[in-house]
Length: 421
Image (cartoon, rainbow, N blue to C red; front, side, top):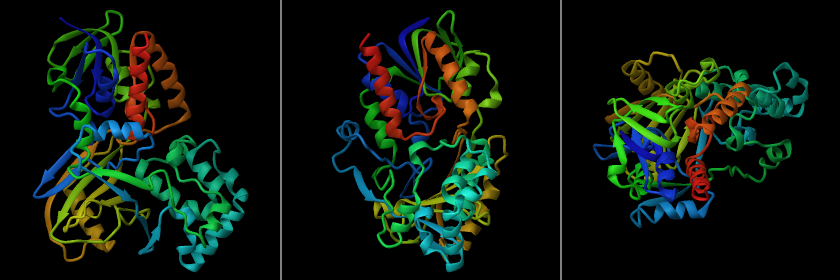
C-alpha cells in the first residue's frame, strides 16, 4: 500500500497550486482524466486555439500573477482592456446593462428608468433572500425583466428564486441609482474584470506554469477516486490501489466527495447546471474589437459568445459559444450545433462565413447553485471532513462562485496553515 502525507484530488488549478505552496514533497496528485488542467484545458485545431470554455484571468494580487508568469515564456501573456456588449432587440448595448439603459430604445429606457426609481413598489413580490428578489429590489422591474432575469436564467438553467441573493458575490456588477444616472453623461463601465490577461497558447499555459513545479511522478493520471475510508484514512482508486494518507486536499465537486467518503447527506441540497460549450473557427473575421457578447433573449439558444480572435489579434473568427442546461438534461450536441449556427446568423454574428473547424465539450458541473441550504450544509459537512483530515477547496470543492485566482489563493492559504504546523 502506498503512503503519502497529502493526497491531492484533482490536477487542476487548485490541486496544483496546493502542491506548489506546501512545504513538503510527500504528496500525490490523483487526476481522473488523461491530462491535467480540469476545465482549463486548451484545444488546438487547424490553427485555432480554444479552451474548454472562456477562461480569462483577472489578477488582483501581483504576487500570484508574477509567480505564474515567471514560469511561462516571456512573451506568452497578452493584456486586454475588455470590450463586452449585449445584443438587445438586434442592437448592441454596452455591458453592464443596468448602467447603460440610456442606450435602449426610448420607450424601453423610460420604462427601465421609471421602474428603477419606483423599485420599492415591486420588491416585496419576491423572496428578498433570493437572487431574483435582490434583482428586483435593487434594479426594479424593467431592468430585471429585460436583461438580468432572462440572462441569468439561461446561464444557471433554474428559477432565480432558488438561488441565494449573494450567489455571485463580488462578481455581480452592482450599481445604484446615482451610478446609473451618472453613466449617461460620464460612461464608467469598469467592473472586476475590466482588464484581463490571456496566454497566446490558451489557459493551459497557466496550468502548465503550476505543473512545472510538480514532478511528473507525483501526478497519477487516469486515477479516479472511488472511496475514502475516513476511519482507516485510506483512499481507493479506480484501478483498485489503496493509498494511506494523513490529509486529503480535494478540488472534486463537493457532492461527489461526500459520496466517495460515504458521509450521509441530502443530495438534493447540492444542485448545479451544466454548460455545453462549442468552439468554432471560421474562414474570416466577424465582429471587430468585441471580446464577448451577452444574449438574454430566448430566441437565441446560447447565453454568451466570445471571440478569441479579437483577444489574440488573429485574422479568422475564433469563437466560444455557451449554452446552459439543467444538470439532468440530455444534450444532443449535433442538434445543438445546427441550432447554434442558425442562431449565430440570426444574431448577425455569422454571415457568409464558412466553418473551418469545431470542438465541443459539456462542462458537468459548470455553475453550482448557491442557496442558503447549500451554504449551511457545506459549512456543516466540510467541518466534519476537516476533523478527519479532509479539506475541500476550489469552485466545486468549495461549492461557490469564484475566480481562478481565488482558487490559487485559497490553496496557498491552506498550504501555509500546514506549513505552520
